[in-house]
Length: 149
Image (cartoon, rainbow, N blue to C red; front, side, top):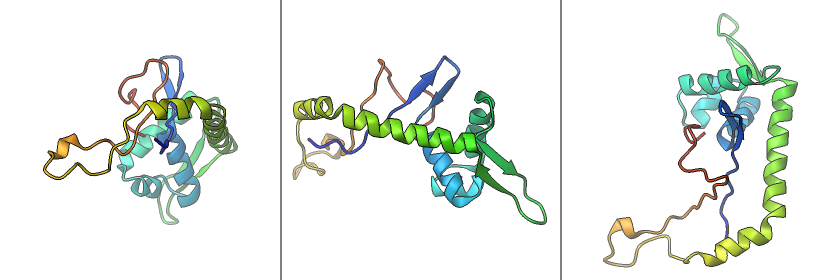
């Protein structure tokens, strides 16, 4: 079965993790120029987006996002140099893991049952096979507290 996505999440001690949600939020801030617009693009509340930005900024030596509050000229946000570096490092690591692990990923995929995207006629809807599989590492279970972001 083909791998549809790989979700990599890094744990730094017990207090900070960086994964695809935070990387996607940084990318959205870079393109949208606003934390609220980035949150909307990701179907995330403004409060949640701000909480994630604050967590990233607090965990890093220098802030990853520089935000200005609204006002007569309006607010906005941009990635700092550190933010752009964090995003670039994470995306590069995703590529490295996908390429270096291609044989192992294919081996895991070969063990899976291939199932149609819809259940057979007359089968209950809950018998539908998942269309996306997430490979989790380090004995991780659940979303690790990152809230799916």
